[in-house]
Length: 107
Image 1: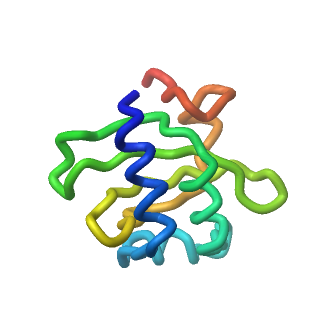
Image 2: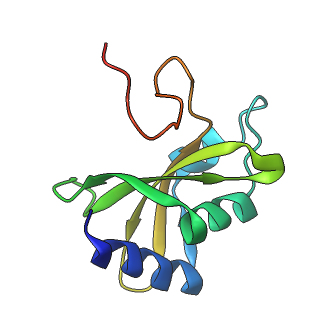
């Protein structure tokens, strides 16, 4: 995994997080209720599990980390010059991910 993108994410996340409309919608679903603080914790302390250098929105990646009460959260984000664009955040489903929630299950 490209360590450069990980450092860039942390640097711009410390400046500002910009939550795109899709992220706000997904985070505010009643069964999720993911806070901005949880997303910040995930991007600053989590682990990149998928890297999307050719994404149409710009280089982005999927990060897994712990939110409140130890629940695992996935965050897809894209670093920009002055902020981190949070594309989406959700609670990964065990049916779609391996036990570590880092590896997608084969369909």
